[in-house]
Image 1: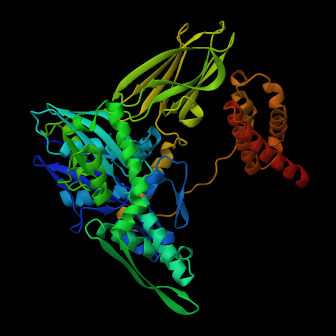
Image 2: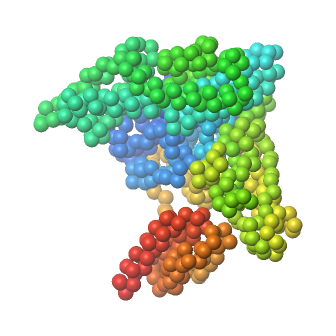
Image 3: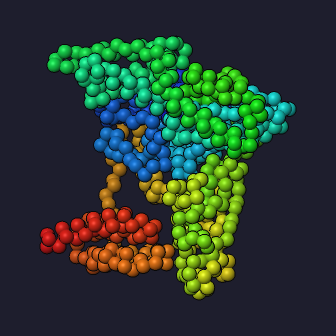
Length: 603
């Protein structure tokens, strides 16, 4: 008997879960619904609400509800929910844990393994945040796969025929377009492009602003200033958007929305499909630009595409069909529910892993170029981006290159890992860094071998080796956010378990600050890397160095809280200096100076 592996589409607006049962793909339901709102909230008693219940209560209590958290995945932020703050992976874990509970109820057995989909254009940080969410929900995440790839796993193709597909995936918060070749049961992604902040949520916002501005002109009242009105109008325009996919007009009506001078005001507005499509046309034109880029990267023309597949609820918009027909010269396919084909594909991938006979082999690609920053012989600027793994390279893959030290007898190099397409690293995304220390004394040009290993889940392993001695250091780019400690993960899982065990929201986790070891702070400045700075750094950063040394002398004489704040500001200043961010170094040093002034003045 093969393992049951859940196929989960963790969406911006809705999420879904599927399994392979008796060699068939089954989308699991809860109370007759296959779409599960990706919404988390707290009711007035402080109990956790997830899904439909959370979405329903958002009208009355928007301040106790979190929506569209997928758009924040990979960001170093927290969102407020009740009296506590949570990271995006923690909020997503609540959604995933509920999906897991529904699946176990439907299947009548425990389930602990899953395949989770992400937008093809998600970067490594966002992918690892998704993996972390699964782990916090008690799931073993066997594979992270791209949403367009998942959709192509379930779409009807002749296994004996070679076909080239274009998957147009317009969801609630993200957009992807992928060129996929299917041949002999093998699926190969040739190119991907997209935008992780473009989707149905943006269409909703345009409609919402239009309704609010129209209401404001008529009644001299801005609905955006009243939280409950905002929530009610947003849900009303979401329904209007869906109606405009099949109807030429949609009415937005809400009675007793707000009061003005003691008189209740009602909203009654009709929106035409033409007006709505005029609003969203600039956003849809961006998707066509991404489509053109994907065709160019794949080296194909529209006539080379055998089938255009629609994925994501927002792809039902008639204007999408019109634009695609005009550009591709063919009618797009939406026979399989665009909201469900991604979760179904994830289930197929789970079946492949468990050994089920599903007749598909998956080949995926990396959607972004990965590389490092380096000096170039013709230019001493430290901002040059050197690609190691090019965009659209099939994964897993390994690439390496050789670099040389910049100075005679250089004892250390910093390896800064970036993701993006710009030649200047300042326009790309830094996803990790580490130092290779203790290099042998050698003339400029001492060879350092940098190696990138990108695994099937999109997790990047980077190593740097001094070729002459074999000295090596490594980093695994799992998350550009601060790494979570395992005990913190355990605490959160227990916190989440408490809700599912007794439907009571657990007590807040003890987050008392760690005690600062003052003795350890004597080494803070050792992280300063003058070798990597421009000529004349001694004068440029003289004030900052003096200030930090003065601050370190004060550490034994101040409270633990003040010592912690001093240490953080010193670290912040050092990091800015090492990254040649002069403005940031000055700003953090200024904060440090203000703190020292306050401490000295209070003595």
